[in-house]
Length: 348
Image 1 (cartoon, rainbow, N blue to C red):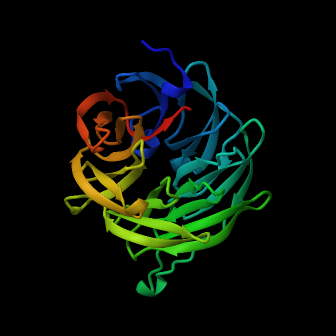
Image 2: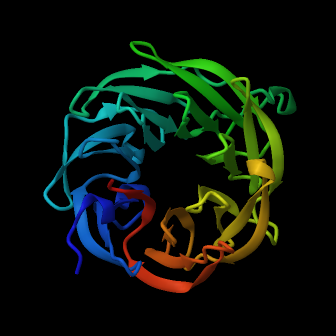
């Protein structure tokens, strides 16, 4: 059995009973060389830590306490245990996502319930300090729903390589790009408006510098490309090879190890779609859909040539081996039972 190191430990975000789940807090698993996952236990008891982020250089983990409208820092203790680090910071309604600046200067939080985008400063030890709310979103499609304003629903943050931050607003169908200013937080740079009703959810930055987005409502993928510092929409297409069905909602998108393929998860139909990255990173072409290995694939993670898929409702993480040339998965390599997993994050 391998020894526990940061590189082969994964933290598991979860729902606890306050969020309708069955977990006790942040979970910890060990990834073995054969791709199998070993349940280590609950790293720390916490209330619905539905999304997690890890400090780039320090043994500190940040969690969105979704039902409690809080963000909490945790410090690693021993092989896999975590302990609260500082007091929880207030956030917004349904705080569903956190992300950490690659230079360790701040944490961002996205709040699905009320649309808030928040920034928290970090001290030299990774502790949460000041809280800075960003300017609220304004619906660019407001004229399409007169008399019934749509709720802003911030859903995720992406730290861009050029130092800016991109956030999705699922309710207003927008991507918002921000600059970080110490002492002020996030200052708006520009926005990219996506089609009405698409619902952009999660994003990933390709080595080309383009950003791939998966939309929860329309189950599509989009590509935006930076032109002289301003992102523009260059591609829109289906997220799956077989089309979406009634009740489907897309969840996560991530890249394969070489950046040649992307993987999009769809809840309802419970599948992962393999998409080819084409035309120099400006197109995403669905190749094949495959069964995700459980019910409600909330999040997934590629580690080397392995794909781990967390299923919120069937309480399991399914692991697949990916073929290097085709990007396609084989049969389920390993299946780990774990309660209500909602996010998979490498410990380092």
